Image (cartoon, rainbow, N blue to C red; front, side, top):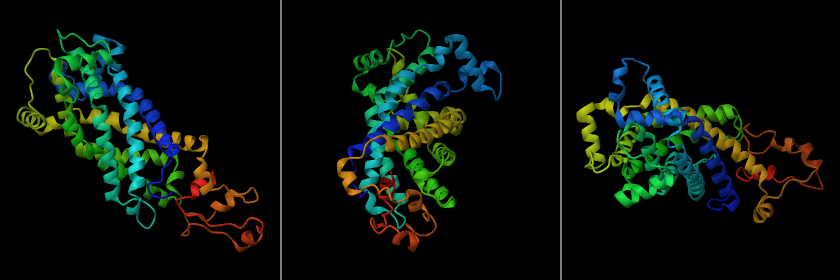
Amino acid sequence: MAGGDRSARDIICDAGAGAAAGAIAATIMCPLDVIKTRLQVHGLTEFAHSGRKGGIIVTIFQNIIRAEGVKGLYRGLSPTLAALLPNWAVYFAVYGNLKSLLHSHADSSGQLTFGANIMAAAGAGAATAIATNPLWVVKTRLQTQGMRPGVVPYKSTLSALRQILVEEGIRGWYSGLLPSLVGISHVAIQFPAYENIKCYLAKKDNTNVSELSAGKVAIASSLAKIGASVVTYPHEVIRSRLQEQGQVRNSQPQYAGGIDCLKQLLRREGFSGLYRGCGTNLLRTTPSAVITFTAYEMIHQFLDRALPLDEKHSKACPKPDGDINPSKQSEGIGEGNEFKLSRSEITSNKQTPLIPLRNTDQRTAER
């Protein structure tokens, strides 16, 4: 496909697969997300009385079950889903379009350069951060309100959005936006790393990136996520604290902004405070990334096969005639040449001469 020539079908595949994959991962990993958020916001002081070293995750888990029941482990799930459905739908759709627009920066193998991938990932990250920040604010407050005595809890996602707007204005919806935008550095590292690891694994297996197994996709996504998370984690702690502070009614904000929050964190808790909850975060985000990216790739492949081709696309890339064995066409791919056919195969198909396909159009034609 030519750079920038993306159809509505391509966007639907990207957005649909992204939304479905995000919803699956969020539902499975919600309990660890609740624990991570509480550690980010309140640190270890709330749980120091337990005296159990190395078992903080289990301790918090037990405290939530005892005080709030199983429901407490899924606090904030509805705004999480409400945020993730458009979040991943918008992200993958914008990311795919930006990659297509930046196609002129592809290398000799047809893959975007690392710099072009960073630009695409950062642009998609900025769009989704601005679009979904109010829902992340609600998610954070719903997950932590059970730890605030005397606070009138929000009844639902919609009531929380209304209440925040009335009490704090638009600024309340966008509290923590600055560190969220700083967090674009996370996806700017994760996605290019993911793309490059996939390319490496595809070359190692002598296959195409689109044909990688679910296991190889899981390896690529986990390595990319761990690297990006360790490098960029401090912004998540700052963002969570800024988003949560409006939860206490009629009180002065504890932090004046992101920089002030960073200074206070370093002064009171030291450098380790910037990585509070990082272990829990990795336990949550690494399998979450594996689930999200693997589900995305598998669902995208399914939608790619299930949705009918656009009329314009069908004319541009007609399917091979029935006389041609598709399995024969694919032989030789990954062996140094883009397309190989023996002379006997060419001469035996006089009625339907074979035309070598460009690498970018090959997957479409083989459907």
